[in-house]
Length: 270
Ligand SMILES: Cc1cc2nc3c(=O)[nH]c(=O)nc-3n(C[C@H](O)[C@H](O)[C@H](O)COP(=O)(O)OP(=O)(O)OC[C@H]3O[C@@H](n4cnc5c(N)ncnc54)[C@H](O)[C@@H]3O)c2cc1C
Image (cartoon, rainbow, N blue to C red; front, side, top):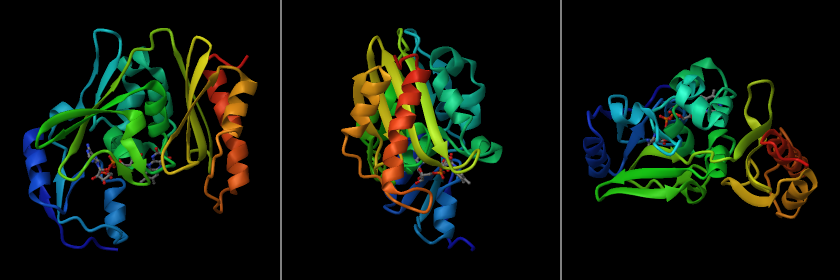
């Protein structure tokens, strides 16, 4: 289906992008366009103006921090996460998981900012960013504010980024002796996740984040042992959706399995 008519702006600086977004209630950021253009074609959204972030070079950088963490611009693509030596050195799980997203076309165009701002509950990256304790930086008319990843995801397709605002970068803390893991069950080899889990294990403790089982990623902590992790997931009272790919009961079962696998991948499991 053809798009309905829409304005288009291509700012050269973040301040200009924020000003354009604030000027029009119906303005929306355009990143890789992988989701928003499909949503517009389906007539599920009709922005007045698309503010294209393509020329905002500062949103395209990946940098290591002095303490061994990472700062990732919102316009960094999944493909760039996969090949970045900074990501490999600091938090390799991010590149490993980005490599599992869909296919090469989607990874070449889709950005980390678009992935988290669309907050499709089946996406790969939100659980990872919550598990590692990332910080999301949002720019608006009043300047910048930082939001912890665990407070960023508010509902299906809803995040802490308000109208007139822009996610500019994501900061990941250093591993500092912790280890990360990820596991998922997908529809076909490179398909959408039915259930996924990310885990960060520090000492004997696991921070486990489940995706696809609720409107937002579900964070649990448990001793980093197989039985304890399964018990924590079992006791979490998950109410996942039922659909053609799996019943709620099947997803509850998978949640225990992928959580335990993610913790085992992170070196826990006992
Ligand atoms: C066929 C297909 C299969 C896919 N499979 C998977 C999958 O298995 N796993 C997975 O994780 N993802 C998957 N995706 C999603 C993909 O990886 C992208 O993350 C997603 O499409 C959005 O990224 P984008 O850069 O194209 O964002 P866009 O489509 O440009 O934007 C998406 C939304 O985020 C907003 N937005 C974008 N950037 C910002 C910003 N910096 N600040 C504020 N708001 C912003 C836009 O306004 C829009 O509402 C799939 C996509 C497609 C098309």
